[in-house]
Length: 312
Length: 312
Image 1 (tube, rainbow over the protein chains, first blue to last red):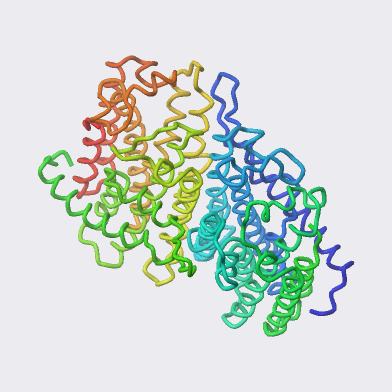
Image 2 (spheres, one colour):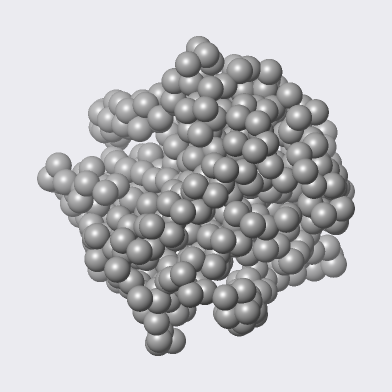
């Protein structure tokens, strides 16, 4: 686990990303857009594709695939297909949340990864519907009727993803975030918010891979610890980057949280303590991988380092 | 099936509705709202409850329960619990779609069932998040981890609901609806739009009950026909009511579709032909029930009549 090199992680990621991009491209398709006879496509699928196929980092799919491969080092086509569906499903939930977050009634962002946001490009109604449809599509991906994912696994995957996305997960965290502007949160409250807002989905990314890999209970537990640690680390680093980076490197407007008087780790703990916390969480993630007893955790370890050491 | 009386349907509905309201009240709860120590609830659950617990007609849950009971006339507690979860899940999808539809960037409605719409009451961001969380909660309801719904059934239910909600179902229909303003649609195009926009979820309501009742394939097929017929009938009648009713009876702004130059059955076929079509679809639904070979279809038959003969 500690033997991961930047080079080997890069090679692994490159391979996986080719698969993820191809799968997303295939699964977010125009096939469903009906020909109404008056030459007007609905634009819905177009907006969905614009939101998804935009060169995101794909951290969540990579976590799913890394967790799966830690359990099934030489996957057969069938198991890998279930993991790839789960990987793409979690990315669709992430993508939909960005589309809705960027809307004028939320963060009112016009730029995302250097491109106009979905509502700028497709209108607010188009962005609203595209986000809604992407959430549904995530659950469609998890429930193919071609036998490629066993029905009981479909049920488990849907349960984990739904809870991570909903009011006790991502949506709940966003609601707390909205309500907390101008309030003084203490560290436990801030931690709780972030665990829901971004942590839950990152944690779920790992768990979905673990479910596809049929992890036994103790391994599931260790991978859950890993998922919680990197989930929180991700947000702490996000807060740090919002302060120390410029907009060009981030691909979005920097310093926005502070401008909006939003509570962040940096505003609460200070910059150095936040950076220290991120490193502690990395150590916790690495310890969890050790505790899992799995041999093939180099990709998971590499992704944890990447989360903490990234510059954007 | 033809022996259903208004009185017996009323009695059945009253009993079922008590169960549905209690279940929704229990499942859309405040339990998940964390105490952040500064006395501010997030408002998310409050907005979700406001959107759901508002005295809707509950047609979709009733369809699910009626289909289930057509297959399992004297349900045990366990089977009934799965059907009730499915019934509430489909209502949550319906509720979220209304919340998002009413938003300023969509239909910009301020009144729903005689009450201020969710975005008027909780703000646009609150409405956006509440809708998002309601969609996720639907899939949470279908995937309990207490063994009350077998995992393979969870998978099937999630698959049917996701497809009915997404870009090849409700969201897709709404996107076509948005894009079709000012266009001349022919009857097949209009039918396609409605089959997606409202028909898919009504059809799914029936299928979810059929899955919980473990319908054999030929019965599933007949119930699917029934679901398609009433799904389309519902929208045809909606178009008719938009023309012949006043706002007070509808609980929303009447005549809005015509004002917005939206294509409707009435604008396309005329009032009388639309009313005739609705009756033909009722006949088709009744024929499908006959073809199902099920003995206990009086509730399904009664609901089909209700869909066509309702005044709001």
